[in-house]
Length: 187
Image (cartoon, rainbow, N blue to C red; front, side, top):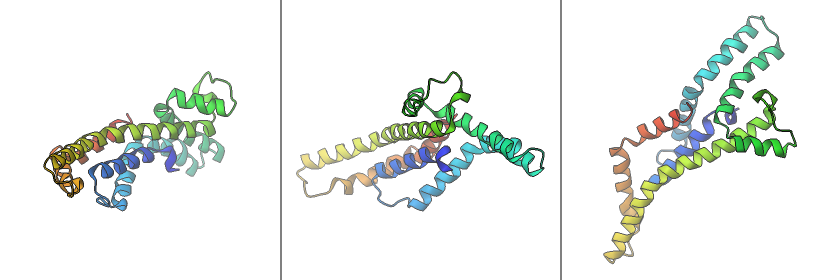
């Protein structure tokens, strides 16, 4: 179920952030996954609200049947996935399924939409992760070159660069920027 939400993108970018900082287990996996879950709840709240209003509550009040509730619940989730899915990824999955080019979004089966959405999420997460990684890579390179020029080849560059990367991350309010970029990437 998490694969049809914003979770994959968020947890991958957070993992890239930790890796870019060069901290092996800080923050721990449980913190990253917890933050990813809460950001997923936050970004998916409008979708889940629509599912609750148009599918779950009418079903619980026995105003609609199971099949209609399922169809009503799928619609907001499909709309979310369509907004995040690239046409090229959708085209790939449609061709792999040997289906004709759809004329409307209703012509795209959900079993084709989900993998297209996931592929797009992976690509977007890796692009965002790369952008996060670059400044920290530059710090690593500058520290390594500086140590080499000083003849300190036995000093591991990570030993010197880690405090500078953490300081940079704190100074630019890194968690704020990462969270803002993640949440706004879904609107």
